[in-house]
Image (cartoon, rainbow, N blue to C red):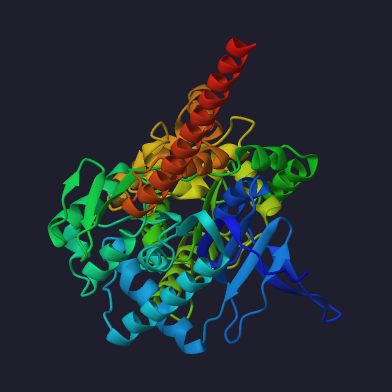
Amino acid sequence: MPATHHQYDLVIAANRLPVDRVVAADGSVSWGRSPGGLVTAMDSVMRERDGAWVGWAGEVGQAPEPFTEGTIHLRPVPLSAEEVRDYYEGFSNDTLWPIYHDVIVQASFHRDWWRSYERVNQRFAEAVAEVAAPGATVWVHDYQLQLVPRMVRQLRPDVRIGWFDHIPFPPVELFAQLPWRRALLEGLLGADFLGFQRVADARNFVRACRQLLRAPTRKDTVTVTAPDGSSHTARASAIPISIDFQGLESLAKTPEVASRAAELREQLGSPKVLMLGVDRLDYTKGIRHRLKAYEELLRDGAIAPPDVTFVQVATPSRERVDSYRELRSQVEHTVGRINGEYAPIGSPAVYYQHHSYPQDEMAALYLAADVMLVTPLRDGMNLVAKEYVTARHDLGGALVLSEFTGAYHELHQAFVCNPHDIEGLKQTILKAIHTPDKDKVRIMRALRRRVSDHDVARWAARFLDALASAPARPERQEQQDRVDEASRTARHAGEDLKEREDRHRRLSERRR
């Protein structure tokens, strides 16, 4: 339904809207809620507030008119085909993404991409300024919108602005490679509070501000001085994201999911050990390293199908970017070689699935898998690790987890590995397979307790509380001072009136 012109107390800005266009068999068009942690996180927050979401609808050309879906008011931002190519596929994912992920592949620097990134960020900022109510809370998300905080600040100095980084923030030695490093930092410093997945990421940001901007810093704060001499303080801190624990656990406990998990194991040949990997097809996820370790275990005779099998789900990602197309080719070639050399007829060593699955099917896969391999080379968080332990309400299974994920800092009781160390990764996989069940139950119980206690609702509440308590900006403080002064004046006027009335009453009583 179309939304009336209105302003909102909470405004979320993210590259994508939380909905996808759905075309029915009869040609009718509707919007369906997108899967994903951010959408789930914001759902509970926006149920309690008058909120709007600014983002791209996922289609090139003119944006749909603003509309309401469920409890969220949606403000689409248009992107042309050229902007998708230059702002999103180019600058966001072929310039920033490699720099922020340890330059696993070489980053590309193009001035046209940067100009497109600026234009799109300005468009997002203008949309945010349009829908934000006076004094609203604005929450900007992720690396695609790093200029938006400052742009919104220039348009709407009355609002309180937060920014959350879903991916790693790189060491200054890597960040400094960016020709536009100063503009990116100044854009982020338009925020009052900046949230990161890890303590190291927040420290990297503060250090970059100190070294590249020569900005005064103290612990987790950066002080910024404007050309007019005014200054403000931005705070940076780690607030790791999580998942909807109760929702996924409840789904995993349904008879339908339990039945599907048993059916999957049977379809896969009822192996004694089922290993599982679930990733976006991205070079940061360590899929090639994982396959190499698995192949060597087969070659060594440490494991063998049909007793052991491996399912790798690789969700399609950024298929028009050259490095991603090359990765897909390499992974598919490796899977073919492994199955050709080590799999008997009818019992593949690797089941490779290059598509996504609905949440109930993923819950069944998690419940079916004896060993979950989460082995990224670098990852901001990796919610798959948290999803797996949440789905394992039976306390079964074992999580092999890379120490280069944000999740490692919360789930350190898992079977931890360095995915660059292939021999070490092999030994960790074997340990996860052969550790006694009673010890794996103890480990899984501890992992589940952590995710349960720190779910997505707590993450969102912690971020908004930190934003609300961030240092006040001078212009907002002056505004608050004027409000306080008016209140004091009114209070004093009321006290003066009461004093005059009391004096008049006492005088009247003496006359009587």
